View (cartoon, rainbow, N blue to C red):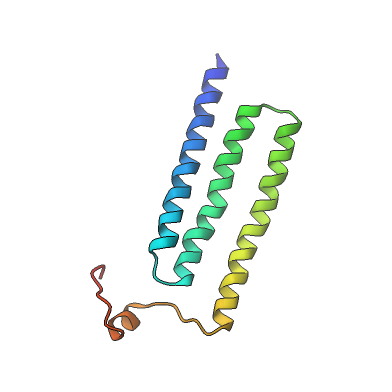
Length: 114
């Protein structure tokens, strides 16, 4: 009775994680500067592993594999925000400024989103 429910929840988590990964990838490609791209990538780098590893843990049951998956998730939850932060600091140190509405208008780009 509970097995089909666990399979359904797991499939939902895996599909939602995959959808967020695709949306985050589109954001990384579409956004104008490194800071907004880091935001798109950083947010999805946190939520996608939670959903996908959570779905995989539900599929595998409570075995040694689940423990290994949770260790991988813990590693990802510590390293991905740290990498995003380090990349943003390096961009700031290099003098890269964020794209703003005023800077976009000054450079002659169209601002159809405003």
